[in-house]
Image (cartoon, rainbow, N blue to C red; front, side, top):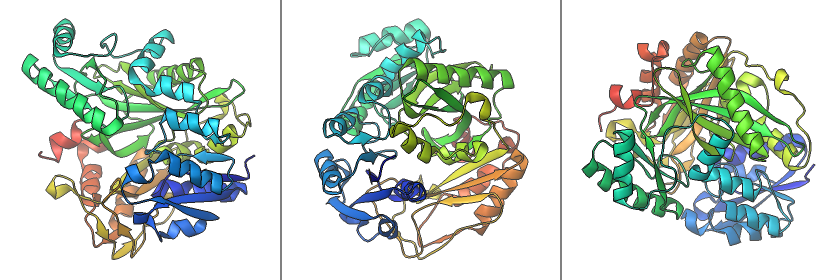
Length: 448
């Protein structure tokens, strides 16, 4: 087991990793930008080093500064969390060259599965259903138009690197496709330094269901069941839950096994999320792999009772998985609401500033993962999420009621948040009945 780990991240996920390490008896080294200097969670680490100015490219994304902090901190391993450098294969390789263990997959596996075009090819080879798409990357408008005519409009343009909906566009005709192609390539280049894109047949009003998988260095790989992430806006997830209401037990079993099979065939180790879309007829299709821990990992933790962060650390240190597939049971229902500092009434405009008062809810089955507190200043430079509210109950109906109660208890004053929108969504009859898809929020609540 490691004795000392650097956390190459900030905020909620940094605090989550610090807590897991403390329970494992591992010392932690935190990093921070000038914008995060003095944040309360930093005091819980054994040491903390400034890695640069507020701008991410000058601090959390500056590989040389992060590695310098790791060397000064005398750590054995780095946990990247999610976002920033978490899926950067180059950073992963540099860690290895500096004899620092990266708590995640190998650079080779990360590069292969992190590239969506490469991952699709690997999925096909593993016998996993894939959305009909271009055989390779699309480099010019004529190629794009030909593909679209072959499979039929609408089509989806997707960046091969990164995620979070960046570099993604839907086009319904030739003219829109040519314009959207340029926009997607430019956005992907700006966001990920890689403007390469490919095309897929657009599945209208799909469900977004993903499977948590974890694999060790001893050839063992298991799935930890699925999460439904269909409640989203512009490909940004708002609410996640497990189990999914959109799939049958037979589909659940087949999808989860497909995800496990793909990860094992890819020689992948550590935590990964295999993402699928499900069409109106219940057919599921692979779309991508997230080669890191996910924001919504607590949903899986609540229904399985497995601490994913601790398992990541144990696997990276060489330990085998302590359980087999048949040991992992889905118990009850869990729901997570992302609490973002955004104003839904103003097209989700970010709402940075001082949280004058924060009262987190509690009670049976309620979990609040957050680094924010009364007096905390939400900086304008990073993701707007200030915390995650998670509930777990024996049934979905009970979980919905508990979440509504918890949201009503919660107080966040001084900034705007998405709490009122969450309350509307959870109170809607379509959500109660499980009749939701990835366009549900935009169709029902948001006029863009």
